Image (cartoon, rainbow, N blue to C red; front, side, top):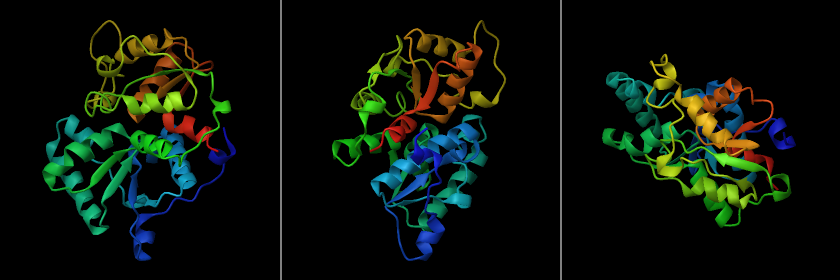
Length: 266
């Protein structure tokens, strides 16, 4: 792990920034996984490291951040979803938030496509699109000697790909880092779900011959990767579990694209 990721980083909190009379350009929406899941906290830290490195004008909500309500809606509890969403929307309005950037594909999808039905008015940016923009503008530079030649396959998250048509951004980043990229046989709009979406992550497996995350991990392993790259906390959990199931967790890494970028920052 790079020194930048080992060290503590300063993350501005919206309430403090707003009290000082400032309005950050971006709200960095961390999400439940980034806040509470020990593994995905590392992804949140990696992306915050990227934001700090770029000098981005941003802040997080900290203790004021709540769940978007996405799992509740997917599980069928519409009332709970709307309560969560309306509470969040009022908070956004109070802080006059115009742009939200998020590392969770589920948060991205619901904030972008479903919150507007409840009166939300803000731009939602996926972190991969943001990173691509920074690379193309020459603001984000990497030391590709740290990544060149590493064999990587990439799993397309459902809510990033099929739901929001974001296929090229992760592939552009992988290529820009000089990684050796190997596509799985099912990719882009034909990619197999990791098995966690639609609140499936929070329920017992249904009857069948094989769990979806095992099937998807097997497809990833067919490419003989050194790294399985993901871009969603749900996908990361399932692919990590798949590697453990196949006894491959010691030899193959599951990394979020933000982590790969953060390791190679100049």
